[in-house]
Image 1 (tube, rainbow over the protein chains, first blue to last red):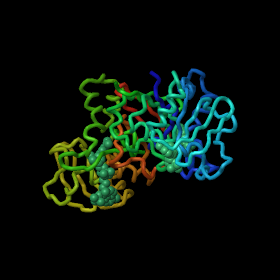
Image 2: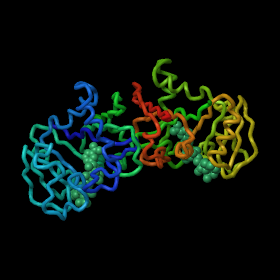
Image 3: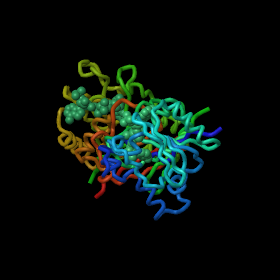
Length: 207
Length: 207
Ligand SMILES: NC(=O)c1ccc[n+]([C@@H]2O[C@H](COP(=O)([O-])OP(=O)(O)OC[C@H]3O[C@@H](n4cnc5c(N)ncnc54)[C@H](OP(=O)(O)O)[C@@H]3O)[C@@H](O)[C@H]2O)c1
Ligand SMILES: NC(=O)c1ccc[n+]([C@@H]2O[C@H](COP(=O)([O-])OP(=O)(O)OC[C@H]3O[C@@H](n4cnc5c(N)ncnc54)[C@H](OP(=O)(O)O)[C@@H]3O)[C@@H](O)[C@H]2O)c1
């Protein structure tokens, strides 16, 4: 049975998955690259079998579809710009059907490299049904941001999460853990610290 | 030069040092023993040189005085109870002069085992001056709760913090990281994961 997974959803020590305010110039707000720099460093300077690189490389392995929130797809106001095609250029790194949850749907956008963006105004359950059908035997990735991840976890739709905790404090932004009180009762949690200081948390749904 | 240190100040994945509401029956609110169980387990079942035990044992080593907040000393309303002598019985585990920050000071209380509670309505700087004088060549411990720890860190009065992150999510209570945006620029942060799942964070002020 294919799984629903979150990979490389990075948060700060205080649980923020992005800073604020998000804008075209600063997609992550005041967080800048703080939550993501470790991945670039692991490719550039790290051992290819270093722990950061191992996790980083899992980013897109085994997925047949992605679901993301409207605020990951573009900066505030992208819904009013008919030319907005996402942050990632013509060949986005998803390479699968990708479902963008939004209250302002538009026609699908076929990109290069296998990514097609579908814009859906639907419940998490309905969106997941679409994504599962598109993914076939492969897993579905819940790609973020924090609002989308925690909504799917709260609805008990997620089997596994990889959450790298970066040792920085943001104090504001979008919060991953909100509404997830007692998640430790539903998920087995293990973790490992990389030499970079990133703490890789791995949460697996208990059976 | 003696240091100002925080040891074994446990928080949840979302940064709460206690749950809510705090009461005589539930000193940690809805957190129950979740943030502290690992220490008891490390004494009872753990290896004496296991990582949890090593950290747990550092609790009170090298200190000549402690500073704590009013809400650590007692449940809401203790200030109105002239007979309240703290949670810890007649021989509290501090064994040093202990300064309780409160807007309702009362005369000092000499306990057994070397603990004397002094009640002070003073700025963090002034309280620290009293504690330093009492501690002599030894360090001063900032004992919590979260409000007190983050106030002292924000005022740049703390040299080192040991913060065990327990893999549970509380979503409410008293927050350690609030107001500490960018703490990674002032402190070097390292961490290690114990087999219990507790992530021991060690923050050392950069020179
Ligand atoms: N830390 C990481 O690894 C990581 C990963 C991915 C993204 N990010 C960052 O996270 C930030 C975005 O996160 P976020 O939490 O603000 O938002 P988000 O999860 O990307 O998007 C939330 C929004 O999606 C729309 N939406 C969600 N569910 C819906 C539904 N069922 N039906 C219709 N619309 C729905 C709503 O938008 P409207 O109400 O506006 O239509 C909602 O406000 C960005 O800065 C992004 O770059 C970080
Ligand atoms: N996680 C751990 O390892 C750990 C460790 C220790 C304690 N705890 C728990 O943490 C909880 C208490 O934490 P908390 O953050 O709520 O409160 P706290 O830090 O213990 O106390 C804060 C209170 O102390 C008084 N205060 C602080 N600074 C003062 C100053 N400069 N002058 C005068 N009064 C001052 C104020 O009380 P008033 O305004 O009411 O006078 C303030 O509201 C308790 O449940 C405790 O058991 C957890």
